[in-house]
Length: 266
Image (cartoon, rainbow, N blue to C red; front, side, top):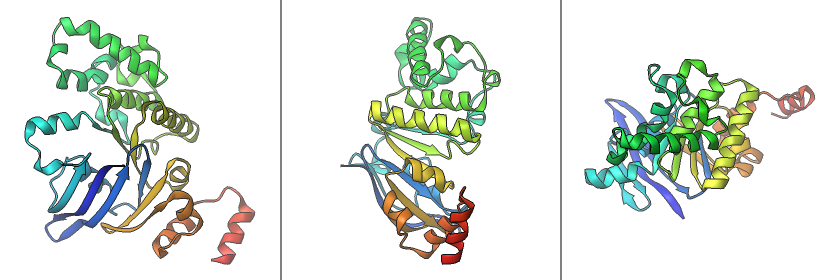
């Protein structure tokens, strides 16, 4: 079943076409990776999907509802079900706020009953549960973002995204700012959360090695156009488009012998 459907989506900035007539669906429970070079339109596409940008034309359907036709009250409800994790978690956090307030932001925004003193106990309990779910101790709630490593801050960002029990999480380059060992830990966490919570992911990345590890399907974009959409195993084994083949050929191979053979057969 499709959770998200994009129909002939287009976004223009004057003479620049950032997203050009893109149609695709995101199935519930899957990880759809969106890949392409810088400037390919992948980030603009996800901002349209989240209704953070207004399209020039086209539709975005979330669970059958047209996001750009919803009245404000209904849109507010839908926004609870769509969350995002950004590349640099530190830039999305107020350095003057404690972790408990950072993670609780969505809760307080969407539930007036949690505002003020009465909601404080409930908030700390919920934030503790969220931190535990992402592998952090609940007793770190009173610390500030600068007191954590990059990987720990990304876990905090993931906890905040999970606060409202979303169905869809857009992951915009969630591991590119992390070193390789921490990347692996965060990817394992995301896979575990998806399995336990039934999450749907849209995973934006330029790192095809990571995409091969996490994606069920892959959408390849270039200059705002969707060039190829295929199951990950099929795309990596037999890419249909010349541009996709070029992207795959640019991925470093840790085996020098295999890399030489690949270059020789190109």
